[in-house]
Amino acid sequence: MNVLLDHLADFREGFIGTVLLTLASGLLAMILGVVIAGFRVSPVPPLRMFGTAWVTLFRNTPLTLLFLIAWFVVPVIFVPGLSPWTKALLALGFYTSAFVCEAVRSGINTVPMGQAEAARSLGMSFSQTLRLIILPQATRSVIAPLSSIFIALTKNSAIAGAFSVTELFGVQKLLSDKGFPIAWIFLWVALGYLVVTFSISGLFRLLERRLGVAR
Amino acid sequence: MTKVTVAKEDVATSDELVVLKSVNKHFGALHVLQDIDLTIARGEVVVVIGPSGSGKSTLCRTINRLETIDSGTITIDGKPLPHEGRELARLRADVGMVFQSFNLFAHKTVLENVMLGQVKVRKADKTKAEEKARSLLDRVGVGTQADKYPAQLSGGQQQRVAIARALAMDPKVMLFDEPTSALDPEMINEVLEVMQQLAREGMTMIVVTHEMGFARSAANRVVFMADGRIVEQAEPNQFFNNPRSDRAREFLSKILHH
Ligand SMILES: Nc1ncnc2c1ncn2[C@@H]1O[C@H](COP(=O)(O)OP(=O)(O)O)[C@@H](O)[C@H]1O
Ligand SMILES: [Mg+2]
Image (cartoon, rainbow over all chains, first blue to last red; front, side):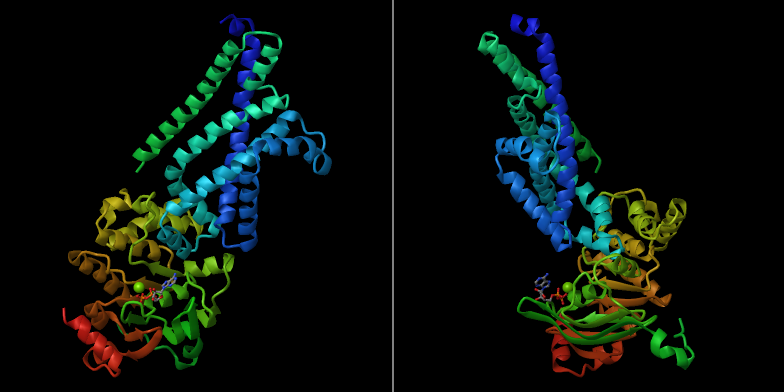
């Protein structure tokens, strides 16, 4: 108990780090995921190929490897001087976007073909059809898988701790190095994650209920 | 309505609204459309009839390029169908399409269904679009359902909304792909009446249907398709009373005997 009270500032900082990193990479993953899902169903072959390549690459690469690439390859080849936090954001966001993309794409596939055909025969462009007709109807079936994806993201953000980004899991290492009882530290860290993941599933359940009533 | 007689000079170009020339299409090994030649004049109502699987839906869908063709040309109001993109979208806005399964936007109200194309495609002002949508809904007899969702309507009402949605774009031609085939018998007439009204008002229409009553009373011409070919074209009474081809005779005897 007193591990928590004595180091409340550390825990709080770690907790906020985890929440912020999860939120930011979740947002990035959502935007990328929806756009890439649009690419994957687009009538333009190069876009479709790009989408497939993106998903294949990021879904099949171990996240730790992506972190290593973000830390040691990206600065050399692409952009030098990124902060550890930004690198963690990119690794987590890109990785998760592949899963978001696939969830959104399977949601798109639940919307009957006729909806898109009706939109196109009114003269809507591909992107109008997707934005105004398909995605709104896909949302409902995407909510449940998205919830799991964001919970996984929360836990995956722990890897960032090993790369010296301040977050909840990193607090554990900090304190156990100082010789505090490990069981207690783990308990408090685990509770911290539970708070975040429970909030996510609660939020999504609420969303699901809302969308259920809307029609 | 009297058939408009235009000065003969303009007729050749401006009177032909939809022209298909040697159109061919395959689905894999299946040759669904074989050398289709078809010309539809402005204001003409053409009924397409034929056995299931003969390519009627495919023919309809190639006209607004929901299906691409392998060879041949399709022109609408003198313009060849462009490739996928902005041009094609603009052209599709001029071609109304009514589907067998209605395909109303399930997440939008009836009113929104009829407004959406006007606002997003024609960039019409919202209040104007609503005014027009309401008057079209009144015209097809579902004005009181404006704020409901499609799933709350009967099939016949949904199909009439779908017609209103297509009309809201002020199309040059309307395509109907078996508009009454998914309907319960008692709802068929309410949809056919709306279509008949449209035909009387001079709308150019291509209608895939087996409703002979409609064909006789509203069509200028019947096109009979079988196995991907146009086998016979004739004026409705002539076609139904006196079909020339064996295929048509055989087909008519089947649909008349039930
Ligand atoms: N998307 C498709 N892929 C493959 N075959 C198709 C497709 N659409 C239709 N067909 C086939 O093409 C033929 C003609 O279909 P269709 O135009 O729907 O006929 P109809 O409307 O006259 O019943 C049928 O044999 C059908 O199975
Ligand atoms: Mg058909």
